[in-house]
Length: 164
Image (tube, rainbow, N blue to C red; front, side, top):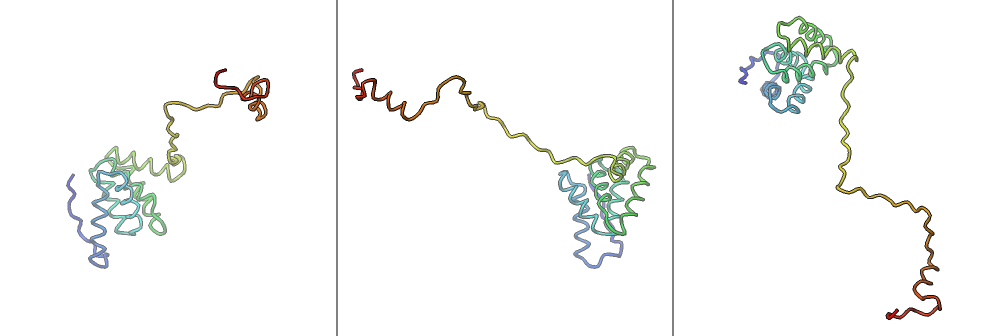
């Protein structure tokens, strides 16, 4: 999907911040899930400019995965932007696009704590082909060092010859 260039809002301080915002905006539409999510989180720290980019990604006709990353960024807004981010998510509940409505509903439920966050998956260690187990001792007698010496020497106490 080709995204059109964003017009600077005038709040950006310098050329570096404009480049950073355009880079993060491009990452928000990335095919890689981790890049989208990280871009959403980084945009949540960008105050009004980040809110504007996340709102545009949520409301325009884009993939559900991009909308999820934008909702994640809106959920992670802090400070004075938190209230504005909540308003954007509530506006999304009334949007014409069903994907946007579903993403916003899910994000608001997560914020309220009604949907628990997924814990990181814990993979079970891979089992090899064979399982090594201990054999139970049962009724067998324990061997002692003295018994082993007797077996080597034989009943008469002499060492056994190799002819036996």
